[in-house]
Image (cartoon, rainbow, N blue to C red; front, side, top):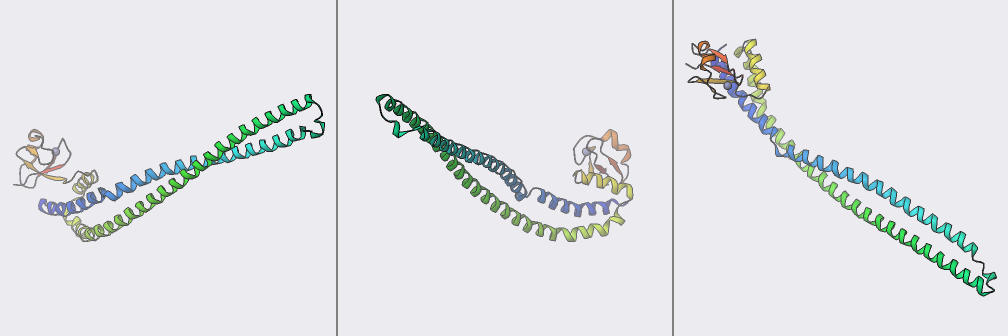
Length: 234
Ligand SMILES: [Zn+2]
């Protein structure tokens, strides 16, 4: 294991790491997540509207049935041939007024239901427009993300190839495992210099723990605080 080779490997890997970070911080990814969340909310609203629509249509049907019933039952009671005396005229008048009241009430109910239906249709149209806009926005972000991905892949290709060629001659198995663990935990750089008794990454004073292990240039020791590999340069 040669420290210089490892540091050269790490230098290239840091470029890969930076591209990965760039990818994770793409504003498109964040936008797409946000759009999906908003879309899901609107989709829920749409389902609720659908339920309200069914209710409103049921209401209208119920009211229309009621009006039909009223017309058929009350009209049958209006016997115009029996309009002979004052008494029956009076009861007929009462019957007609009560009929009027019931019909007006039902018409009011029907008007309310129709108004509700029209509100639902308006909301439905608005929601659809909003969802279409979200769809467009999502596609725009997706296309932009794809473009950037292609660009990143182009930059990554040669770097990955270099790392692949180097890895065997650079690490022994145990050191590579340590390096990989730190790399996966996104603790980069994994190899850091020993700086006057301090860890080159976390800056903690580690003299007591590592000084006796770092005697010669190229010696390494694990930082007890951040877990990175501290090396002695010279
Ligand atoms: Zn440290």
